[in-house]
Amino acid sequence: MTTNIKKVTARTFKKMKDNNEKITMLTAYDFSTAKYIDECGVDSILIGDSLGMTILGYDTTINVTIEDMLTFTKAVAKGVNRALVIADLPFLSYHVSKEQTTINAGKLIQAGANAVKLEGASDFILEEVKHLTECGINVAGHLGFTPQYINTIGGYFVQGKSYENTLKLLEAAKKLEAAGAFCLILEMVPEESAKYISENISIPTIGIGAGKYCDGQVLVIDDILGKYPGNVPKFVKQYANIKDIIKTAVTNYNDEVKKNVFPYKENTFNLTDEEREKLDSNSVK
Image (cartoon, rainbow, N blue to C red; front, top):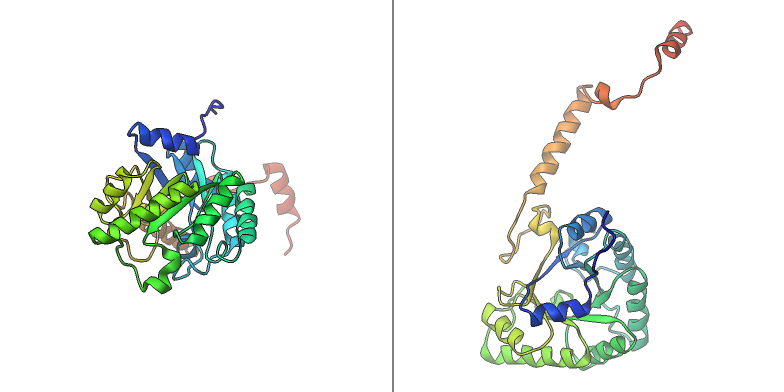
């Protein structure tokens, strides 16, 4: 295995934006998937609280706990050599106090993340971003559609759909940048709005449902592999259909076991002829 691997860092992200190089990011929630993504050269892996739906079967992300995030962050980090690992701070893990936010973010970093991500740009959030960066913790911002605010937003709606709202998003983006965020996720934002924001801040923007003019793109791994059984968002391209592959394999396995076909000889361990003869001669009648 190659040992001289150049690790992607927050500094790398900034250089890529400055050089007009696109940044790639995918979610991962387990060791093997993270390892494969990393080996394919993807720049960043996000342990998203989307695992609430894809892994834990919840309807939204708000049921995910810091304990959940720690478990999956540890697993993903063990599979990564090159990519920048970002872990979501889940719902209410960074809204109560600056002290609690620091502790929770610190736990994710100790679990193997290189950065944490949080949603929104309220005054309180901005103070936390500034404090975390002062503590040496890289912070990614998240604007546009923010899933942890699903109950107050009232549904899955595109954000920034007017000139005025685009300017509000840009103002929030600039505040996050000033507070120390090293990159910004823009989710479900019109392409023109995302382009305008990307061109008017110096930190990289990573789009998800925000068009091709962001500095990079992120998608949920289960979506692009066709694994998640729920609805596929408009902004997703499915690059494979793992669901059908899994169902075909499991159906074949189930049938072969029921028919006593599996395991085959090549899947079986055997005694030597001598030892088998001993058993046969002493068989219980």
